[in-house]
Length: 195
Image (cartoon, rainbow, N blue to C red; front, side, top):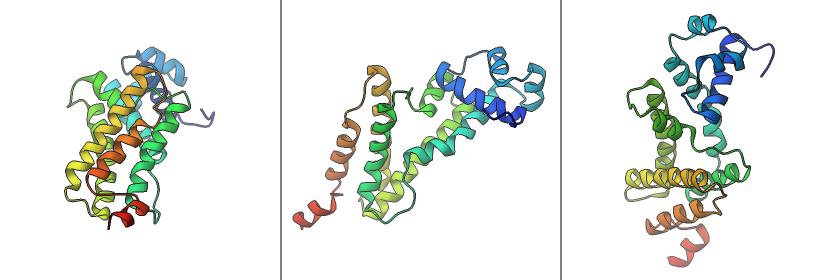
């Protein structure tokens, strides 16, 4: 954490780290200590711990999405979709993966109306929207349903990695690939053979 960071930035950074590693039920004292900020300052910057949960998740969201989703390029949609699952494999293999932060937060909070759950849902929808855009480009018959199925595969693979405490071994890539194959979205070299 940068020494020139503002108290708000330090709180968001510390909260993001601690909520991911220890869960959102970590105490305010531990958060403030990690950020080097008093409780009084925290409550001047955030109306509540619930607001800090939501804002720390939103603060981390863009970087996490960029870690998973490829930027703009001209590769076929199938390759771009499967890259998300390949990147998940890499995150898990690095050894510091504790699951999808959005799923973890929503499961722990258990309240779909909690500000943190609302932020989690927003970012999970962004992944589904990415899949949907790529599937539309690929000409999928039902891109909405297939995008949801791919998101479920992603979430299932993430949970499996945490529960089993081991690498995924490409199972997410294989499962997503099977869904794409069933939808007629084949690898370019295979598509040429099928025509």
